[in-house]
Image 1 (cartoon, rainbow, N blue to C red):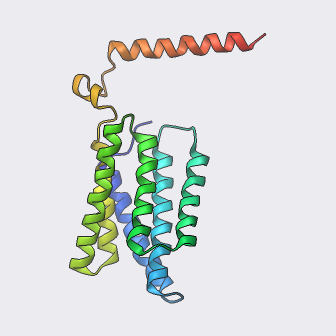
Image 2: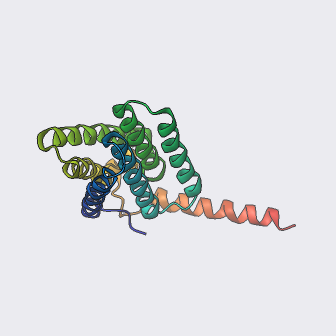
Image 3: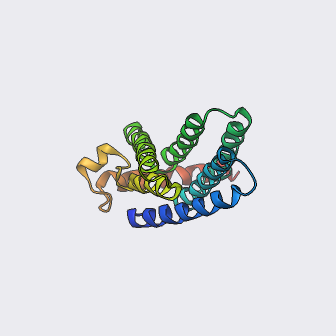
Length: 189
C-alpha cells in the first residue's frame, strides 16, 4: 500500500476545514463558543487520526491507538484545561500517532513535532488575520500534510532512496522470513 501524498493531505485539510466550520456553526446554536470549539477540535482530531490509521500500512495496534486517542480526548474534556493546552494536547496526540505509525527514528519524530508546532503557529496566524475557523483549520492541516516529506529513516534516506531496495534490505527481509519459519517449526510440536 502506497502511503499518503501531500496532495491527498491537502484534500484532507480542505475536507476537515469545511467540516469544522460547518460543525462549529451548528454547535453554536446549542452551546457556547468555547465548548463548540473544543467539540470541533476533538471531532476533527479524531477524524484525522482515523485517516492516518486508515492510510498506514501498519495493521498492529490500531484499536489501542484509537482507544488511546479517545482516552486523551476524554481526559482533556474532564480536566477542562485552558484552550491553548487543550489544543496542544490534541496536537500532541496527532504527533504521537504519526510518530508511531509513520516514522522509524527519533529524529523523524522530532521533525514531526516541529511540524505540529509550525502548524499551530500557522493556524493561530490565520485565525488572527482572518477571524475564520475554516482558514485556521485549513492552514493547520495543510502544514500537517507536509509530514509525508519527512524521511522515515534519516540514515537510509542519505544512502539509498526509498524506492530502490538495497542489499541490506534484501538480507533483512530474508532474515525475518527465516526467523518466522523457525518460530513456526518450533511451535508445531
